[in-house]
Picture 1 (tube, rainbow, N blue to C red):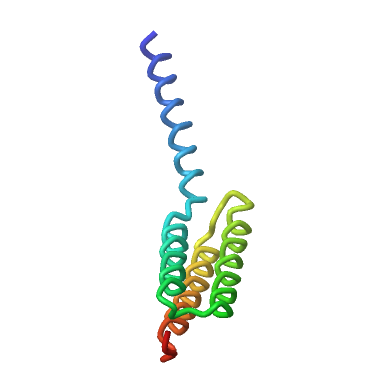
Picture 2 (picture 1 turned 120 degrees about the vertical axis):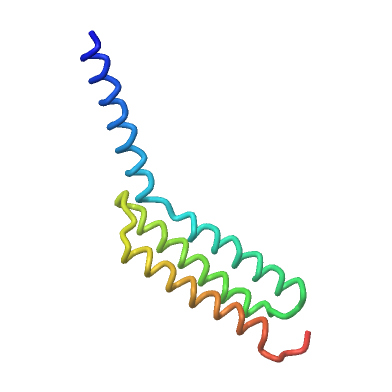
Length: 108
């Protein structure tokens, strides 16, 4: 009786552990946070008048491309280190574009 109870508990722990590991491999919480932060920066720039309509469209296209890349990375159920690196690299590029658009010495 004790042996079968111990085996049952051990199997539950293994199943739970594997499901946690599988879920962790598709998490992109850092990417999600940066996307939200970059959206806020874009909207603030538009409100301040530092980002024009044309710049806004360009920045939004970049954000959409990043979302699509994230979706592709998650499509197979595993986000590899290489995919995560590419997503962060893309977001770094987007961040630089936002900075340039907000600080291009154009008067609002």
